[in-house]
Length: 588
Ligand SMILES: NC(=O)c1ccc[n+]([C@@H]2O[C@H](COP(=O)([O-])OP(=O)(O)OC[C@H]3O[C@@H](n4cnc5c(N)ncnc54)[C@H](O)[C@@H]3O)[C@@H](O)[C@H]2O)c1
Ligand SMILES: CC(C)=CCC/C(C)=C/C=C/C(C)=C/C=C/C(C)=C/C=C/C=C(C)/C=C/C=C(C)/C=C/C=C(\C)CCC=C(C)C
Image (cartoon, rainbow, N blue to C red; front, side, top):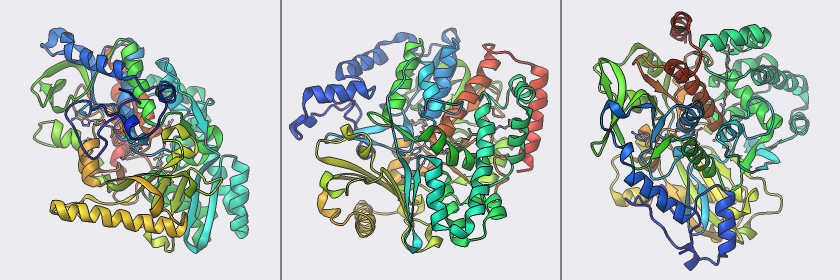
């Protein structure tokens, strides 16, 4: 039987064991092409996958037998945040056990295969994957475990299709993008230059630092001594949002709405609610390092990190659904799985969302103060409707861009359910993701869980089809005439799908501010009020985004390593900084 990587039940139909299909019976793939794809993408062969299963099942050492068999850290979940934290610790010599509920790693950054197509579960826009600077955190995370990946540069980060037929391409080359934007808004030339220059000031400050835990005082104060101006710049912008700064320089309401759209695609909120540091990070990295797509698909990142973790002597267990965090005298000392197994460790790192960690995994009487602040400042961003499609290649005009954002006629619909459409066509960059003669269209749009509750199975299925058809019709009108007739594969995911298969509370896309936040000030770092328990992922500083959660993983590993004695630590400075940061958060 031919193996093209993992042929998994994607978001739709879960099976209890690893399911291995034979796509070759339906599509004429050559074995060597498949093998090339599998090895290029970092995916393992069928034999390797099955032997991994045997290791997982047969490794008695893994089974918790009390504290004699302690790990240094247990990581709950193998999203990019969890994997980066786990691998960074493993590289420092820590014994790490990653426990993943699903059958493959990656969470929102996973993949699935269907009928010869390799689909990214989530976003295909990859920041932090370049070969230069300090902010290429994905590249660095993979290199740290000796598993680099091949990438292909994306010449256009995103092609915006906006109201009033405003079309803007965000070219990789900064000057090309700025020239295009100024051509559309010549009267705002000065404002455009000033706003984006301010972003560069912040990006350059960020890029000059060695990025580690902002909760670790020896490092933090060391950076202030080495790069005082850069650190003060970042401290100054920490409580600010992009929308306010844009308004200092720009008056044109359509241009301000464009900047809202620029922010919305990476933060799911408008510019007034988007922290300036995060906006600067993405608005500049796309030109500095550029957007680069991993050959073989985004799923290869998690697969490579998981492999790197094991190469460094640590472990990952799949189908390991953590039901609770075990506390002893108020300290996190291990976890209990749904099947009753228990594992013990010196520290526990949760890559589940903070809502899941504190609402489900921890059995405590009252929410700690910091979590109350987090939940006061942040709410769960709505989930989304996703459509993964295979289409005939002839549909796409030549030079079609990989990523598109579509908001047809009304700026007010930017953030409303089904208002705007995200579209990625990763096969433009890596044709090996689809059978020859086909492309992948991955479409998603905002859709809250509330809209899907209380439906009968029949109504649920009908609603899925209805909404998907409507989105396809809109894309047909705006971009690709004949789209419907060229579909060869289609699978629709709803908030319920995302809740179930990504294990995210209400299928949330991530945290978003409830009101206007004070920039990043209210975003919690990795330590928690529970001794020995850390959080990592998008409900930690600096929030949503694959590169953002990779940074959260780096920070978490540094803080945990210091607490475990793998890095320098000063308990006195720790206590002081901890109090200072807690005080800052009360101002958010
Ligand atoms: N939400 C999306 O659909 C989506 C899509 C694309 C990219 N992303 C990016 O990924 C980021 C999220 O990354 P992340 O690292 O925070 O996490 P993640 O949500 O991607 O991964 C968390 C992992 O933890 C596992 N998990 C959760 N609870 C568990 C439990 N009790 N036991 C065992 N495993 C458990 C999940 O199965 C998942 O694999 C987002 O901010 C976004 O930028 C998200
Ligand atoms: C600690 C104190 C109080 C003071 C110290 C001051 C100081 C030294 C501060 C330092 C701060 C630092 C180091 C901050 C670092 C911030 C970073 C690295 C932020 C990174 C943010 C990254 C983000 C927000 C990335 C987001 C990317 C996303 C969401 C990508 C996904 C894209 C899509 C979903 C779009 C798809 C689009 C289409 C069109 C298909």
